[in-house]
Image 1 (cartoon, rainbow, N blue to C red):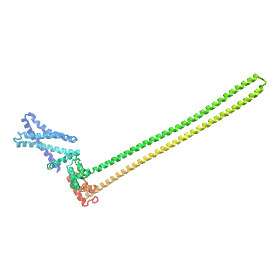
Image 2 (cartoon, rainbow, N blue to C red):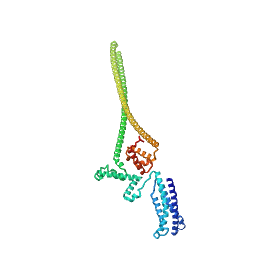
Image 3 (cartoon, one colour):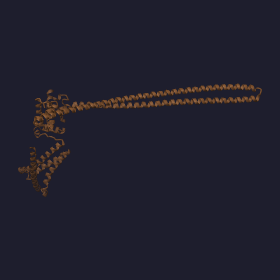
Image 4 (cartoon, helix red, strand yellow):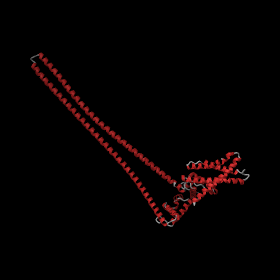
Amino acid sequence: MLIGLAVLALAGGVVLAGIGFTGSYSALVKLGFRHGFGDFSHVYPVGLDAGIVVLLALDLYLIRQRTPWPLLRLLAHTFTGATIYFNAASNGPITADPTGSALHAVIPIMFVAAVEAGRRLVIRITSIEAGHQRDGVPVHRWLLAPWPSFRMYRRMRLNGIASYDRAVELERERLVYRVLLERQYGGDWRKAPADQRLPLTMERFGLSVNEALALPIEAEESARLRADRTAAFEAEVSARAEARAADARISSLRTTGRVEAAGYEVDADTAAARAQAQARTLAASREADAAERLDQATEELAAAEAEQDAAEARRRAAETDRAAAETEHVAAETRRRAAETDREAAAAERARAEDEQAAQAARLRAAETARHSAEIEESAAETGKRAAAVQRARADAEEATEVARLRTAETRARAAEAELRAVEAEDAAKLTPAARATRRVARMILAAGGNPEAVTLQSIAEALDVSLATASGRRAEAAELLASGYALSAA
């Protein structure tokens, strides 16, 4: 049936366009010769009528490319009006013969009507493909309520409301809500709190009553989410700063420990070397003093013997005895000084031993420092373990999220199985398409909690691929079906 109507409309439109173009062409050629166009009169009508078609085609192309230019359509309508006027004036002055002028104007009107019908069909198809089909405010509403119609048209264009039925539904919701507020607050809805006045104050933004009332809740939720994200970010920044401070502290302690240990080792080595050098220097000095004194004593003895030999031979024996005594005395002195030298060497040896003990104590302190560094490293390892525990907690949270997602998927699968069983039951019962659609809407209402108003007409129309009026009837039938006890188990 629809295909036959489409073929008839297409063929009739082509015939009307051809008749209108032929009549318009003849009238404009006649008018061109009358006004001195000459042979150009045969081309002028084609240029005028073809210009209308080309401008409308360009307008459609730009709309399809999502770059509309309203000036093209305005020019096309201007040329259309000029064509109608020229055809009406081709019979002479319009006021002289109104009937003849009207007869000549009817011919191009058919051509223009056919072209505009084709344009409307193409733009509707193009709009559907582009995903932005728009309804207009009906003419009868403009005639019956001009100012409210203008306000509705303005809201639809400003807020991108493509469906006229949707605009009417929003208007009805606001009116009902306003009446309820006036009833609640003694006839003046302005006495209501600001949150309850939101659906009326946000009217110009195209929000429904439920959407407007949900704005405070959404704002609080957004604020809470922002606060949570800020707190998480600050905690993460603080944790990173603490980790960096701990790493820097550990590195500083390790460096300080190594420096202190090296200092202790250097001090010990220096003290030991200094003690050994002092001991060797002292021993050499003592030996040199003893040798010098021995040489002096020998020289003195030789001089005494020479004097004694030259002075007197009789006292040689006595002198010899005295020299022997003196030599013995010198030997005793030398032995005494040698003993002192031994004692000083022993003292130097004790000093060297004490220095070695100090070096051993320094090495013990270095070992203590190394042990302290090891304890710091163990503390750092413990910090790493706590970080690993945090990572495990995060992994557990992600695993819980995945489990919740799997449960949601299982719920959806069960819903799909229930839908499949319902369809199989409908197939077994051999229900009509209308009854199937009614039961499908009933299942949508059950999925939404059982409230028919919770399922919008737009969603029903999209699910069933029907008009909004049909969707409204299906929702009413589904409500009656649910009231009679229909459920998924019954389906």
